[in-house]
Image 1 (spheres, one colour):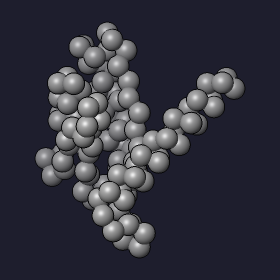
Image 2 (cartoon, one colour; image 1 turned 135 degrees about the vertical axis):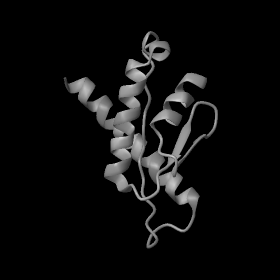
Image 3 (cartoon, helix red, strand yellow; image 1 turned 180 degrees about the horizontal axis):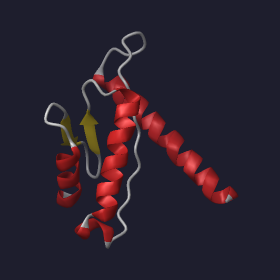
Length: 102
């Protein structure tokens, strides 16, 4: 976990927050990023993990969900977390479908 946390820390901008959220989960709060900025951040983290000497030899990968706060439909951080979790489940399901059909 320390090596993964280190990658997040290095790829994170100083104005943003990265924290461990549960056993093997991390959360990144990216100010002024939007969904596309979040996906760009994810791509950087994925590349960094894939090339990290410690993590690459173990084939470490991760699943990601992205969400953006929408004041018209969300009222709390829990709403954003739920939306990100839903996105992650959708990404996993799509990946699973691609694997079965490919």
